[in-house]
Length: 393
Image 1 (cartoon, rainbow, N blue to C red):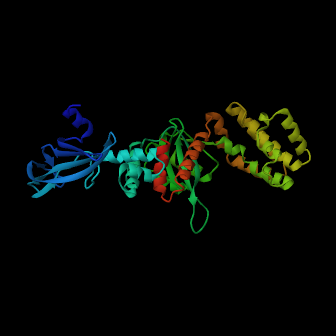
Image 2 (image 1 turned 135 degrees about the vertical axis):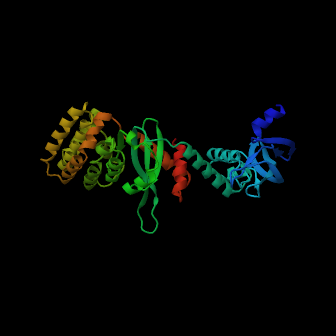
Image 3 (image 1 turned 90 degrees about the horizontal axis):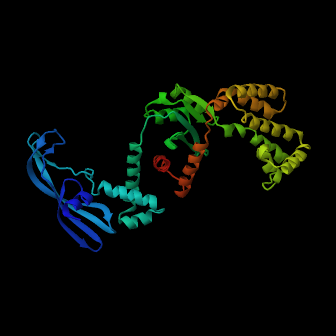
């Protein structure tokens, strides 16, 4: 490789190689800046007169298993307007720093390759604090590059972030997902309407959103109605189907006790459509002795059969008929279910128009939980957000 090509490949712009020294696994590049007019950072006037020179030492990315140190001779120019010296800046190096941005990007790649910061520190030969700061600084820069307007179809869901200290309870993180591009748009601390409004106000194009999928959460519905004027809300199919699961389990425990290995427990939770003839016969025999549990199970299966209807108008007719039949029941669980379905009737029926669910959002929630487990939890939500956005883009 000739000298000019080597300089273009490995050396920062506007620098010339004076000498290269290889010793003890380290390449030392002795460089000097090219003479060029400089714009004063104070008054924006052109500086041409050289005042003096300064020597600085920079860490750079490894080359072929050799650590690299750049010894740069920088020029200081005299500004006639300010009557003060002005040190020239280097492309790829932030002011006041002693490492290149290329070195920090290399640190980020190492952090994604290794599972322990100690291995990264040993490979890069720097402190743990520097690894930590450089990694999250680069993640922040990458997240800023990916900012786009709102897409047409989004999904919203929450997951637990950590236990709240002192008062008990759980702190939540809300995840907003782009369904069509299959990526996470943003992660917000909390799940209230105010928290979502404050954290998502910077994203332009709220009128672009046409469909928003979410679980049956009032704060999410209030946020979507307020923030996205053109969006139709779709209640997640999975959350509707599991509305009676808790009641069925509670009544079943009153009968059989809390035995996790009980075969009937698994049969009650599965859709009847997926059961074999022997399983159906066994389950029907068990339910015949417990009328209250049998009624809850039948309504659970009615919800499953409702979601197998094709077409919006047929689904609407089946939904209204199902609500009428529920009104005749005296079971408190069915009365409560009917109130919930009435409250969310528009969002539930919107599923038959768009056929979107929150399955992709739940998948990204699993990725976020894996990141949290791998890091043994996070104290800083800012760092947790950057890790999730980097992994789910």
